[in-house]
Image: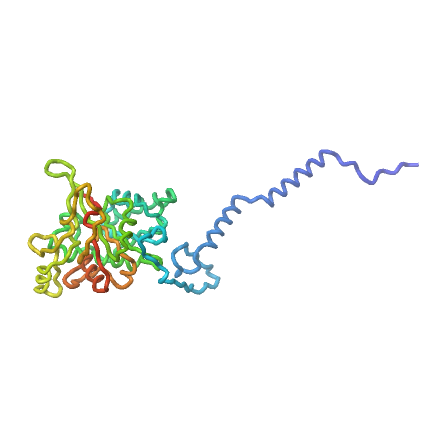
Length: 374
């Protein structure tokens, strides 16, 4: 009688090994994240955090809706302006500062000084406006290179937001040399154009979270690192330090001299001169042939080592080399008149306008920032 074969074949060991390897490979292929999957997930996270509409506040990149999809409605954003503070402790109260600079030339010293500011850079936004000239193009390129290096560098050095505008009008004078800029016959046209540039920059960049606006000229290459904290500590609507310039005197020794003469206290002589001017004429300061007898803050400075840097005086006119303004002053309507306003123009006209709106202007005669020496 034949012996029946077993119904189950004996499993060979090599077969079991192959089955195990195939199983592990199958699971690894389907369950492990690939590099492309990681890229997709990263892109998805960025997409989800982007702004949903082009009118959204510029806090995140705008995502375009698919052409076949229905675009979401514009957002309604509420800003409680009464909650916005401008105090003598801006760091403690997390107050945002907007630094604005009309820039026709790029000086590395300006950028290095900006980076040295000790105010938290995460609370600082920057705004620039450059002319559409060959020199302006070079300045814009150099500025963009500096921005790229900073914004890709250490996080504590990065600024919260940076905007660059290009002027939509031609400059009235072709040269930006100091001697050409300061010629008396160029002043009205030059400062009128500067007013237009300042206003364009201000109105485009000021935001609902801006507490302070610091106007800082592109040729300010030295200031105390605590500049913002020092100026805000006075809690004044408009305040300006004294602008000086380092140079070598006749003996070849390092020395300093006043630079900005637009910060002053008015005089009766100036008021009388203004009465005889035509409506569109302006009264300029710092020119020997026009004696206004105003008290110039630049001339009242104490340059000694032990000077009282906290000394403060009221002003009727202010310069714009380094000018701190509470944002609400600008929001109230104080701007830089590009026309004769009470026979004043640009920053001096701004001071007059601010005072007409009920705000006061102040100066620090013994607190210095330094202008580039050409």
